[in-house]
Length: 219
Image (cartoon, rainbow, N blue to C red; front, side, top):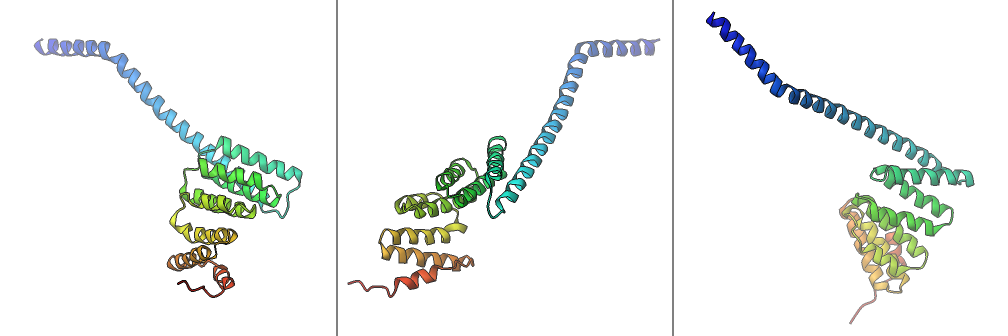
């Protein structure tokens, strides 16, 4: 009988504990399950977004590979760029879309639109290498518009080391446009030195140095 009372007392204790704590346990389990399913749904959503961005970028890449775009194709490209930058703005595809947008604008003779695309990439991308690449392309566009001072200012921005030889090369072009042959020579020599150190050939720089002729002696 003592054992029976003990078992009954244990059962009653369990019932009381469940009455006091059961609801919170159920609620905790529900919340945990919701968290698991919510995280899975979020992962599925992110995967779907990445797939959509990839497909749109591939469409844009295909369009940009054409020799020339008619008006309908250009509008389609513009729409893809807008979708990628607005709906997938934090993705790599959005940054690459801006680079392609700039290239397509140059092909169409719209350098203002190209500059806008590159400036947007510089301002908004979290990827230093692509920002640096955009700076180089923007500087070249500025030189094409006879804006050498603006190009030099653009090149003063952050540019990763792997692109430093190209920056020095463009700096040389800018200095020559401004009539500073000595600064151009120094920049091109730096470009050659950097390209050799990184084992990344930079074609055409030696020809630019040769065109400058024999270096003038200074007193």
